[in-house]
Length: 112
Ligand code: 5GP
Ligand code: ZN
Image (cartoon, rainbow, N blue to C red; front, side, top):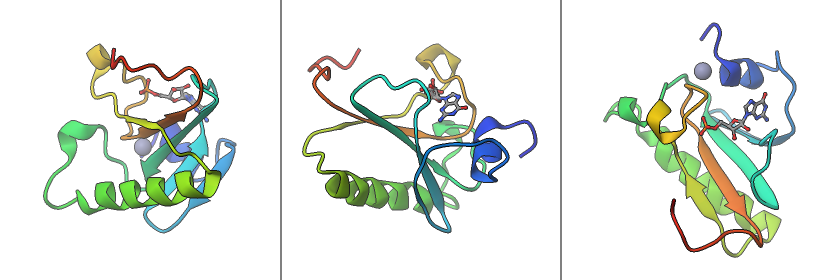
């Protein structure tokens, strides 16, 4: 999608520190890490946010969670948090569905 930051990152038009890529999704390190490890996993197809997940496109979400399980195991991360912000009021700043994966010493028990 034009003018979408993450679509441009997936297309290689904007550089990123890639962690993993397959035909369905792209994983890369967050530019402004909030924990010792902080990466994002996004579908290659543009979906603006969790509100737009439907029976037709939801397979990629299951796939992303499989990829997160594989990547965290490879990285040796035993505990981690997966976050999706949906909508500006919840802190979503990039309108392309993405899952944050955070791990490290500063992860508390609080959700908010
Ligand atoms: P949100 O606030 O939408 O849930 O998360 C967007 C995330 O994208 C933020 O954590 C932010 O640091 C990250 N981000 C924004 N621009 C870039 C960029 O150009 N490259 C990378 N790697 N991450 C970005
Ligand atoms: Zn996009």
